[in-house]
Image (tube, rainbow, N blue to C red):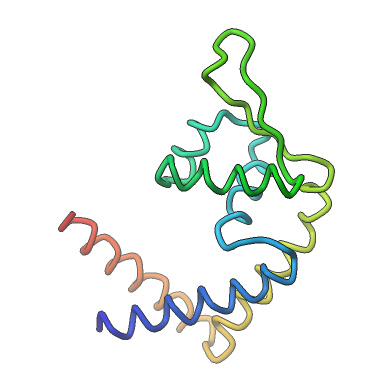
Length: 136
C-alpha cells in the first residue's frame, strides 16, 4: 500500500512538474499564486499558515518568484520584519494558464474513473491521510 501511494504521488508530482515547467514555474509556486489570487496580498507568515508549509520552503519559493517577477515583497511600515507578499501583473497573467494546467492534471488523474469511483477514491485518501496523521 505505501509503495503504491509513493508511486502515485511521485508520478502525479512529475506530471504536475511537466505542466508547470511549461509555464516557467516550479512545483509549489502555483499553490502560492493560487492562495494569493484567492485571498489577496498576505504576509509571509500568513502564507506559511494558509499553505501549512515550512517557513524556509515558503521563503525560498518567494525569493524565486520575486526574482521571476511574479510577486513582490515589501516590509510592513509598522513592523519592518513583516513582509507583505503581492502578486504582480506578470503573476496575475498566469492565472488562467495555471488553472488550465490544473484542469489537465485533474483530467489525467481521474481519466479512467467514473463519478462513483472518484468519490470513493477521495474518501479513501482522506481516511488514509487521517490515519497516518494520527501517527505523527
